[in-house]
Amino acid sequence: MTVITRRDGQAVRATSPAPPSWWRTRGAQGWLYAAPTALIVGVLFLAPLVLIVWMSLNRWPLLGQAHFNAPDNYTKIADNPLFLDAVGFTLKYTVITTVLLSVVALGLALLVQERRPGIGFFRTAFFLPGAVGFASAALLFYGLLNNDFGPIDPILRTLGIIDEPVKWTGTPNMALFSTITLVIWRFAGFNMLILLTGLQAIPVEVYEAARSDGANRLQIFTRITLPLLRPTIALMLILSITGSLLAFDQFFIFTNGGPDNSTVSMVMVVYRDAFFRFDLGGAAALSVVLLVALVALNALQMRVLRRSN
Image (cartoon, rainbow, N blue to C red):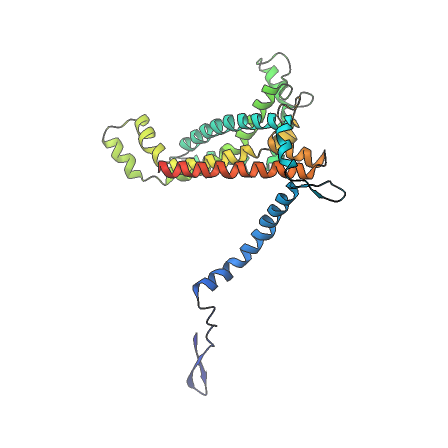
């Protein structure tokens, strides 16, 4: 680096020391720039991951000495009926939530796609529930649908829609329906924003060319919008499926796994084994199995998407 200074009215050229030779290599510079992020990832992700794997290979009580017992924590998973039921329920919840959430989010994105007076208000209104914390949203729905003090039942009775209070979380089907409604209300606006970004990236000239060729709205949607929106839809599906498989807050706060453990998700089983049964080794084994399943599922989704593209 060269600087120009003046001394006694004369120009003097001063050259700063050259950086060390190791710093001038692109690889060394890249490692130094990446070091802070690598340190954070190592401390907050890799180290806990290694600890979880090691815990899953041991009988790890809350108090006392851990004892190596591999692979007992993994073999007893098949003997855990609650976890097996939770797997079936979580898959059912994931399929229903992903389909309904995708349809609602796509409908909202198409509704607010074109610029018109007041469209900014509707975009903000649709996205606003996404700014609410998930735990707060679950508590909000718990208060709204509560049979003792919630306002929903009185409003529906006043309108003549129902004759008696609805057990929103009193039966397995109603508990699932109420939870899915909560999730759609909370995440539809966020997914709408993702899809809206993809819609606005489609060139307007493509739509104009299709209209000039006589294509109707349905043909434009099925042959232009959906194919060009495929990468964005793929991102939304990955986020939705992963979030649904890791569902915890909505069931822990809203339904507490009831009634009769009918809304217990896989993550809730991990939580109960760790903090109610104090079987940290067994809970760690369940976590590792869930992590492997998620990695395999995401890898499969990425492979399918690459082939389709």
